[in-house]
Amino acid sequence: MPKFQHTTAAINHAWKTQEHFRTAGFGTKNLLNERRPAMPKLLFSKIRIYEFKELIRNKKQVKTLDVLLSRRKQKNDIRCVLVQKITLTSDADSHLQEDDILKPKLEKLLEDKRYLAAFRAFLQSEFSEENIEFWLACKEYKESTSSSMRSKKAAEIYHVFLDPMAQKEVNIDYHTREKIKRSIVNPDPCCFDEAERLVFKLMERDSCPRFLKSVAYQNVKRKAMGVGTFHQKITS
Image 1 (cartoon, one colour):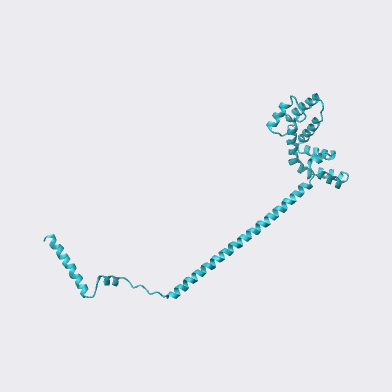
Image 2 (image 1 turned 90 degrees about the horizontal axis):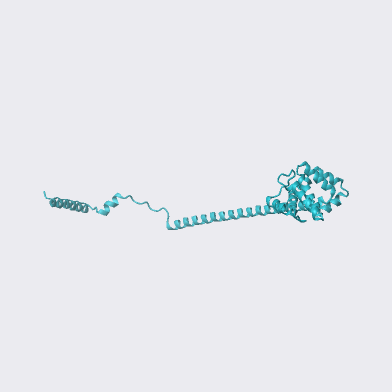
């Protein structure tokens, strides 16, 4: 059978089938509706839906307000802690400043022979007596009047305290040592000033606080004449 006859037969069969369903009361839309399940009806009216939305909105607002109040409370708590911490820190700093003011200064202590001797003995016990000996040697060097005597003392101070092979070498930096080494060829009264300042700062920062807590300092303080008056004098 030719191909066009098969096509014509298929078209006629489809047409008859469609006519059969149409006469029986079925259409294409009816077939689709028969296969599709019916949608359930809404249980809420429009008014109830609006009420439900309003309830959700109010609930969100309450939750947002609770979060905001909680955050404000946290911020206030943090501020209270910070204020308390700052207050405590400032109080501690003020106490430290008062303690520093009441502590006697090393420069004032060394002006008194009793405290000088006690401090020198204390440094000997800590194996750092070269610092106070160097400081005293520099003071004596400045009192030299003649140039010949000054040159002799400058060379002696350098070889005893500043030479890298010296037994009583003090702790100063390389540049300061080399500067003094060049200056002692023709020394002036101020050639040891920088090294003297460095050694004094070392004693003031490191040794003096321990000395003030030592038994040696307390003994000298008790034996000193007019303990209260003298202690007030050296702290001023």
